[in-house]
Length: 216
Image (cartoon, rainbow, N blue to C red; front, side, top):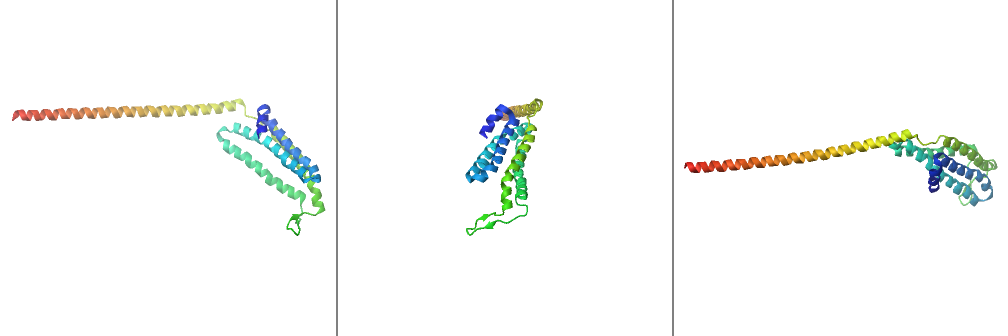
């Protein structure tokens, strides 16, 4: 994804996604040849090259969808990632229907390992990579053409919304502070008034005692 981020800054989400997708499809197509030669070469094409392509393409849709839905980034990313996982479920079924349409069971050897020995089934495995590579590349082309950032007015309106929201929060904060200050001033005024009343009552009480003493 680090390489994808660099490409994204220079070329944008469309070319980043298309580049990564076609690198991934190239790994699938090359697997048609490597699976006939060596298991380790097959790991390089279907494991390493495939994974590098996914890593490059992965960041493009996520970045674009977050710009389209800045208030719902988590939901938007969740839908994209869910679609990524759902595609694996769908293509697993498609692969099984093509390679093993009659649901032939594998043969178990004395060590308990399972292998397919049906010749027709085994011949369909390399061709599967050619079909998948072509399907993947076609879908990636269509998807990349539809992948764009939102227009500036969309971004500006979102920024205006954020600015307005921040302004309202600041106004509420100032209003709360002013209210607290007014309440504090009122409390002090009330305390001063009570103190003045107590002092006046004390003076009146002392005066009454003095007058009573003088009358005696």
